[in-house]
Amino acid sequence: MLDQRRHQRIRFGTPQTISIGFGGQVGEGVIENLSLSGLMLRTPMPLEISHNIGCEFSVFDSPVIDVPAVVVSRVCDLYGVRFQQGPISQIIIEDAINAALACGKASILSVHELGGRKTMRITGGLSAVLRSDFMHALTRMGVDEIDLEGVTAVEQAGLALCLVATKRHGVTIGDQSACFAEAWALALAAPGNLERLDVGG
Image 1 (cartoon, rainbow, N blue to C red):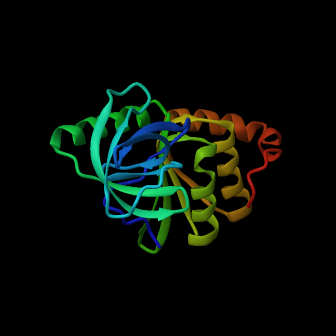
Image 2 (image 1 turned 135 degrees about the horizontal axis):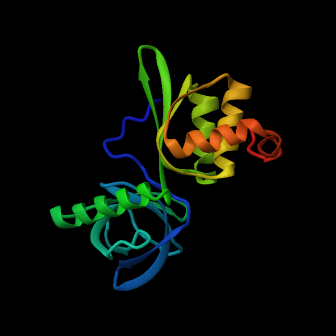
């Protein structure tokens, strides 16, 4: 299934913590992913579906984001929540996401189809945090090309994923940002270091 969400999910290179208020109690959690409309979080707190909670978090150096939300899903200690924000908090969330993507501390991976070809697009950091989504898109959805024009930071593990895609799955590297193109050229000149990384596949 292609990614047709209204808002893209953002993953972070460094886990971001969140304070949660529910039923008169305050607890902590970790943000698994974030979008403009909500987030996935892990917490030991016993949250309940369809109940309101308070969320307070910061994305790296962003201002504190304090927004009410409703719990919409649960799998063990992983909860999906939908924000009930006003226009000001939405702007703060959007600014925080954009800043994290611009410096490569956050990442978006999406798959799009055009003319029968599937393109995986990566924005922000190309890092190990994308491994699960990257390998799922590669092996389960099938990808013809990777668009890396929006990449703002590159880690060795991200280059290794691209090497797996090109060498084992015949995927083409499409548009590239300057930072990716430079790192990719160096990786291709000495691929032995990358091939030793365990990226699965």
